[in-house]
Image 1: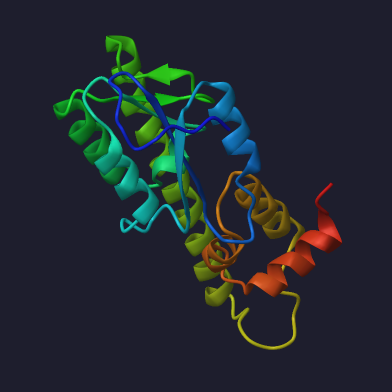
Image 2: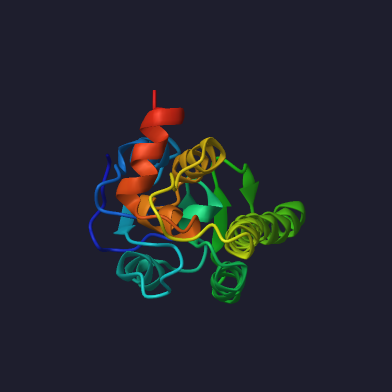
Length: 197
């Protein structure tokens, strides 16, 4: 990956990549950011719900007016609509653009700015719907007395949903908690019903 010295040049593409855990790889994001022309990439390996992201903070401090912050996908920037919009607004006030490679959105254009807001809202809606469905399912099971005992915790539906969450970038531990499982139990269910290819 091409890197530059700390001297800032107006109009640079600066990359930011994030995985939810340290056991997830950043390689594919870095390759895409390098191919897009990013001259420097900052990284974090922690949950997008965590607003204390040192790598992102360094990226924001490094950037200057005219630069563009590039991410592989907007959910790599944050999983909170409010947080994501706050970041976008801060960048806008400083004359810095925001671009997502996968979402094909660039906030330097009016259409891009509009669709960014829509994508951010849908990202949080998806997360909230998953949490809501999970809670409803657990409450329904509890109401029918299905708590405790040695019954199987992972249904095929939960295993498939958990696998999908992990593939969308949600940390395995976080996905398991959202489904009311331990990480080990979720992985056993995935291995049984829907193994990773």
